[in-house]
Length: 412
Image 1 (spheres, rainbow, N blue to C red):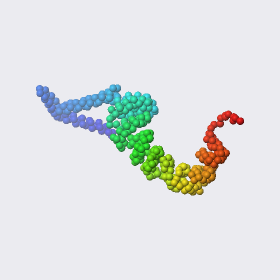
Image 2 (image 1 turned 60 degrees about the vertical axis):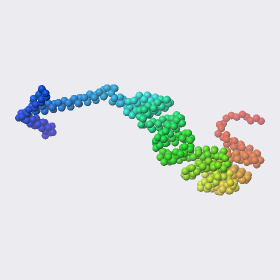
Image 3 (image 1 turned 90 degrees about the vertical axis):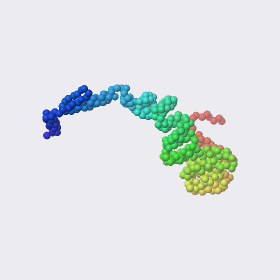
Image 4 (image 1 turned 135 degrees about the vertical axis):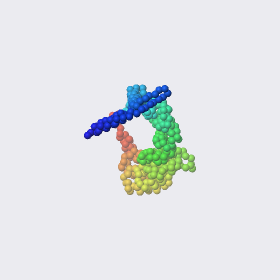
């Protein structure tokens, strides 16, 4: 037997029992209020109350249906305004992603007053206006963003700083980021932007102060962090070398002062050692530069440092030449080393040895510097014909990239 049959039998049974109860004893119900009274049976009264309850339920359902229909049908309802604003915002963000800045600005600005999250509209619209180079409109949209969402002041300020940096308004961006950093010193993206801004401004000393914090928060990869630190300290050493050229006698060399501030791992960096020694030479501290180069090259051979070693004047030129000649056993055909040896031989007034080293270097690599050194030496030795021949070879090195073009015939 199916469940539906059982349900019908149960309903019929209940109805029969109720009918028997009503027939046996209908009961009596009296409702009196002031001069009005209502008399009926208990069962009729219960039926009336049940009908009244059902009517209330029905009215409540009708009211809900009307409200729901009104929200869907009435185009000016709050629900529909928000729904349309969300749709327009989505279209505006898609236009932004596709680079259609004018359409994106129009749609995002139009939907902003009714959007659930107007901040998104205003920030994206400000970026779209920036791309259109309408900077006044971009700033206006950022102000409206702050008025609608004042607790998002950090996000708005960071966006403003990004736009200012992109426009080249570096001083304004510095003021904006300084304020953010003062109020929110742990904001990492503001920290990274500040580092990028100091880099653009070439404010190396302030950027140096940020380096430990940038490293501690791992805002760059290890390789990028090292490259940034190298760039900062090369710039600082170069600036110190320029100051050291006009330094009064007896004052500490600013190049060495900067070098002492370098983190220990960076003092092993070849590019920084090279810059350090070049700036020591530029500021007149060649003896110290020779010592640094000698100690560094004792740990490992490096072409660039060997080149600088031939340029600096050490305390003992004979010892300096002897040191460099010891490297010749392992690098007999190294043109850079041979050039440096020629220069060191000149410092020791060993003209013949200098000529041999220069000629060997030029044979190993036809370099314009080596050629110039040979031309100068041969001229001072009085070998003008050999000097002119070498000069023509050097000239050929300088013009070998010139295109083949017609030339006038030489006059007899």
